[in-house]
Length: 113
Image (tube, rainbow, N blue to C red):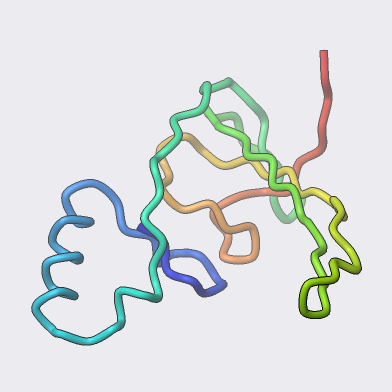
């Protein structure tokens, strides 16, 4: 379960999802509209070298490719709808969080083989 806000560290996983949904339902508020319920993806784990602030470490990690899009419309007329960039980030496989700015992940680059 993911809240619609920036900064990382706010995702809810596993049994905590059920508990949070029940708590939100009992409160009777519309706070549940601030969350997206998503299926968790378990990517392949790889041995890697991570570097942050000039220091490196070896660990088991997973990578995530985020694709950014730009969409602009005026009523029914679509003005722009295109891919506008990407972000590749890598984090240790034992971490549930993945924010680069929050310190959970590092920026990465693509190397396709």
